[in-house]
Image (tube, rainbow, N blue to C red; front, side, top):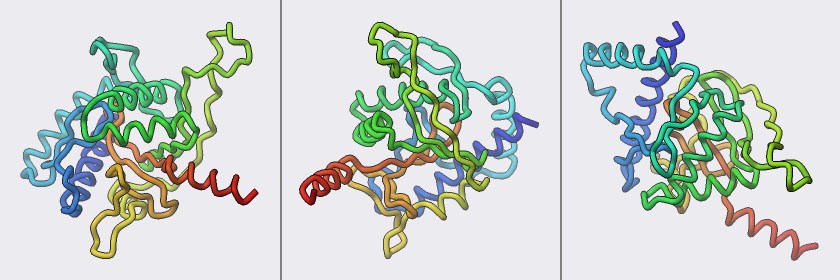
Length: 236
């Protein structure tokens, strides 16, 4: 039951991603994979015949049997296997995987490097939010490797996990329709670094994979934050 549910959510997210890419014809990078770990995402699931989709679901079921609660990651520098990371966004394990993937992408030369740098900066500033509507939970991301102790010699202390927020449970299609901002011509609105824009907050947004699951991330644009801080300082 758990593996079937995991597979259904994965296929649903892939279909949602395909719909976004198909309707956003102005995006020159719409054919690129949307993944923080560089893995490819299928863009053609919905075009497959029902028998092929059934075979894909069966394959995903067998794969997710050992990955429903955890996913094996690779080291960002040498590709070696590291500790399995949870798909639960409220855990330090997930946050460690998120930071690892963001760091690796930001250090690379792909089209997503600039976006990853912005998300990494937001993570460090405490303004990056991760949402998982399929499980009805959202949380402000934190760095589990940052020491919180005032004693610099204490290398075991880590930051305390942020409290999660309960959000309405939703499938990806409905959630993205409600949250992604569109232009007057119906195309998806984009920020300077090609990120999506969140309709309710105006913040930059990302929809894609972290490990084996899909998530929705939003963050405050660094330039906007800097400008706002400078304006407040001047008015004071």
